[in-house]
Image (cartoon, rainbow, N blue to C red; front, side, top):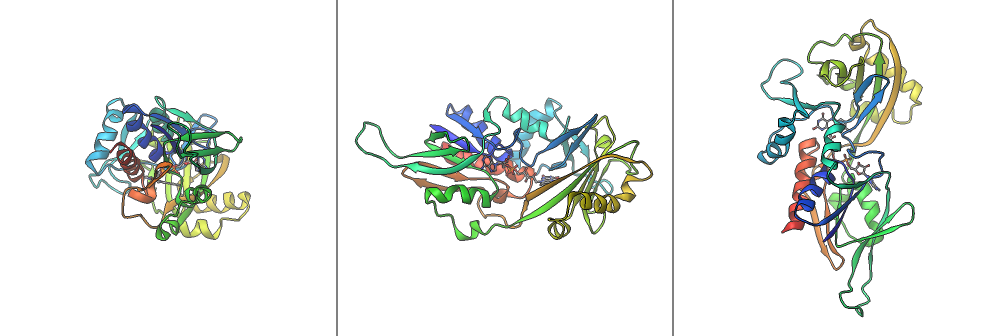
Length: 322
Ligand SMILES: Cc1cc2nc3c(=O)[nH]c(=O)nc-3n(C[C@H](O)[C@H](O)[C@H](O)COP(=O)(O)OP(=O)(O)OC[C@H]3O[C@@H](n4cnc5c(N)ncnc54)[C@H](O)[C@@H]3O)c2cc1C
C-alpha cells in the first residue's frame, strides 16, 4: 500500500512507524517547519524552551513499550515525580527539548515538512484500464497531487474536517463538533536564575496560568528561560489582544516566578487547537471507501495528551494492518 499520513505530530509519527516497518510505502506531510506539532521546542539565543507539551506521564502498557527504547537511549528522562511534592508518578521530559522525540521518530521516515495539504479528494475510477480504480488524491499547496491507497489524517479535528469536505466524506456530527481550548504562551529569556524552586515546573500556579516551567531547571536549556502557559479561559478572553499587551499581562502574572531578574527577550506563541474538550470514544475513526481506507487519529481520539496521541496513532496503524 501507498499510505499518506497528514500531520507529523505524535499521532502521525506513531501511525507511520508500524506501517513503514510492515513494508508499506508511507509518506507524511506536515505544514510545519519541522515534525512534532504540539510537541514543540524553540531556541532563543542560548536558551531552549518547550512551548507546547511540557512533560508526559506513562500509563498504558502500549505506551510503556513505545517509550522504553527512548528511555534506554537516554533521549527521554525522568524530570520529576510531581510538581508540588512527590506523588510517586514519574513525569518524563526529553533531552534537548520535547521536539527532539518527534525528530527521533521522524528520522527513519519519509517526512515532508513545509508541506501543507490543501484538500483531499478521490479519483473517480474509469474502470477501463487493468487495475484502475479509485484512489485518494492529496492536493498540496504548491498544486502537486499525490495519490494513495490509504490515508491517515491526524490534524486537529476541525482542520481534518475541512480537508475532507472536498472528498465528500461524512464524519459523525459529534466528531465534527469537537471543540478545542486555546493556549497563549509567553516565552521569556532571563539574565539570571528565576525564582522557581526545583523541579522547575508548577501546574495551575495562579488563576490566570495553567503551567510555568523553568527550562534551565528542567534540564533542557543552558540559558535561563521560562515558559508561561495561560489557562484556557484567559487565553480565550485575550486571544485578539496585541502581542505587546499579552507580554505585559503575562509577565505581570508570572512575576512571582520570574523573581528579581530581568527578562532579556519575550515572545508570544498561540495554540488555537491546544486541547480537545471532548474525546471520541474510540482510539481512531475509520471508513472504508472505494478509494481505500481513511483513518482519522490524534489526541481527540485517545486522550488530550502525548500518550493519547501516540495510542491513537498506533490504533490507526493497526486498523490499516488488519
Ligand atoms: C500548550 C500545550 C501544552 C501541553 N502540555 C502537555 C503536557 O504537558 N503533557 C502532555 O501529555 N500533553 C500536553 N499537551 C498535549 C499534547 O501536546 C498533544 O496531545 C499532542 O502533542 C497531540 O499530538 P497530535 O499528533 O494528535 O496533534 P498535533 O501535534 O497537533 O499534530 C498535528 C499535525 O498536523 C499538522 N497539520 C495540520 N493541518 C495540516 C495540513 N493542512 N497539512 C499538513 N499538515 C497539517 C500540524 O502542523 C501538526 O504538526 C499540550 C498541548 C499544548 C498545546
